[in-house]
Amino acid sequence: MAILNTSVFYSSAYWVMPQRGKQISYFKSVYKILLVLCSYLAFKTAITVSLLHFNIIEHTSLYQNSFAYIISAIWRSSYFIFLGIAFWFSRMSILSEQELRKKELEEQKLKMSILDMKIAYFKSRINPHVLFNALNFLYSESLDLSKELSKGILTLSEILRYSLRDIEDDGKSLLIEEIAQIKNLILLNQFRFGKEIHFIHHEKGVTKTHKIVPLILITLVENALKFGEMTDEHNPIKLNIEVNNGKLRVSLENKKKTETLLSVEGYGIGLKFITYQLDRYYQKDYILKIDDKEEFYTVTLEINI
Image 1: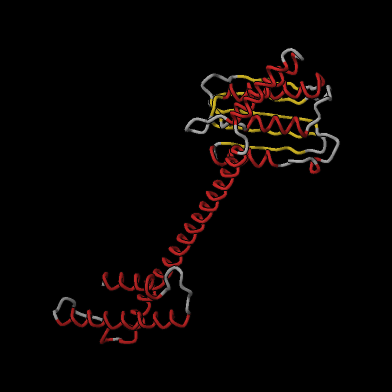
Image 2 (image 1 turned 30 degrees about the horizontal axis):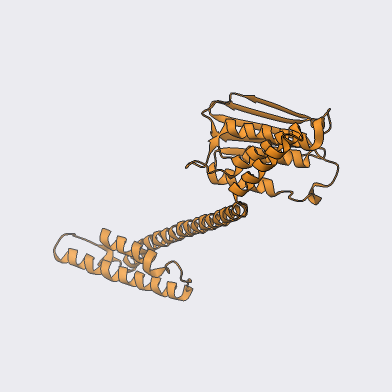
């Protein structure tokens, strides 16, 4: 009887109900359920008669009350048919969820591959050696003309060298190097706009062992310099970098420029790049919060490093 009940269960799950990729035909399903019920009743009756014949059981309701026997058999088989169909629904739900996650993962990998190709394409458009040779030439020629100009060219060369260099296998670089290039970026903007830039920078707990995916913090600062108000001494751009117990916390606040940000070329591209890099390398090990108020723009980033 255990084998018979098990057979009804699996018949309902894998024969009565359609398998993945096929549509449900209610007429066929009802027809198959009736076949299962009849087969169950026939096999159970045959088993009961055999048990009586060999004196394994002494009495049964088969002969005493046939109607009650049939109702009991139908009820028992319906119970296992219901379990089989419930198992089918659970199985199809799990398979659908797995297939959906697989498709989402494939789409995410495809988007990452496309973005990687775009980044590689833009990098390949500029030959680093030609660019650095040109910058070195401009640097040497500007030494006798202006110390500030030559220092600005050298600073630009260092930033480009950092952004175009080959990164390590884990895709990360030292945090102190990223901070050094942030300082170079601030210095470069001071060369461009004079000493009127008001930028406050604090860092705490950063050591030579801490690493981060490159250009994330630089892009944040670049956005603040590009879209923020740099010349207001009462509302300077504020950058705080702190590492504590393996967690990097970055806070960046700037006052917005008066013009509409949406009209500025490149608005939103840097944030998309940052989000992409964070999702790719840190997944759930980061928190990015953006507080976009009417007058001020604040970004808070926490990363488990």
